[in-house]
Image (cartoon, rainbow over all chains, first blue to last red):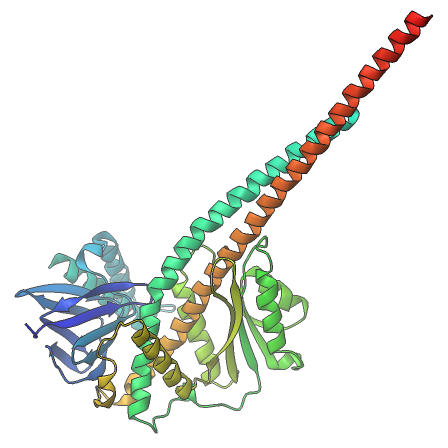
Length: 135
Length: 306
């Protein structure tokens, strides 16, 4: 068809996804991006967010739970994520536990020994996983 | 019969040693397979992040980043990957010797050591080196969090000027029998070297006829969102820890490979020893029997003649 683009999602530990897709929707630090075949080459950091893969008119979510990068070449999109999971790889129970922990910590912010930034990133990560898994 | 009993006991002792070495060989083989799989799985990320950085450097030639700039500190930091336990042949000796060569003739206060594994820690502590970090019992852990930690820690020290150079010392896994101790400079990062590496990688890939669109894309201009500096600032620390992670996985694979080979040799030596001892045992037994027969014959002869 000539309209499919190859998507690779790679983390330091493994290759999470490697297949041809119709479109990728990602959230970069500057905003949402929809990327199709023959997109202009670019590099941008990604937020901790859900990446959506469109294939055969269905959107599939992937949790980019560690943040990372997106590199676009005309026929290849590479996502370099610190961590990433497909929905069925996510342990929902653990994600909920992490969410609770992070919320508790945020509620006590200002107290000693509470790293607010870290807690809010942890919360973001847990929420991303939960959303991806429950979609 | 005294001699034979002694030999029999030795045979049994060698046999039980052999059982242990054989078991260790098999354990190392299983761990090696896992370590190799991990190293394999980590390669795409390491390559991609390098080529992304190379592209940024190529397009914005004057780009600067503190991790790529030399600082004034004379301190050289070496990160040495060794094992926690012995019984792995010359594995630790080789990598530690290489590390010691790196800092030879340097005053002690200009060397900082990060020891991964007990063997490296012991060696450098005994020689009064300044050990600024140690990571022990890493054998069966995934290691990525540790790699990130080491990366962040040393980048921080580098940026505030406490250390002037960071080198990684590890054994590169060639195959089960062979590993090669390597010294790689991590900081300050050498932009030209990264670009050269990526070119080599691309050439190797072409030879394997796995051409994707990498060649023609050379002339295409990239857009960076936001500015290249910002992107680079987020990419470089990741390259640092990805390189630590690679070194860690290579070192692990080498360790298990060495241990497997060493234990295999030990098992074979035990086999040879058992064979020799069995031979000695049979001889001794035969000698004892001959002795007894002689005694009987002598006695009966003495009796009949008397």
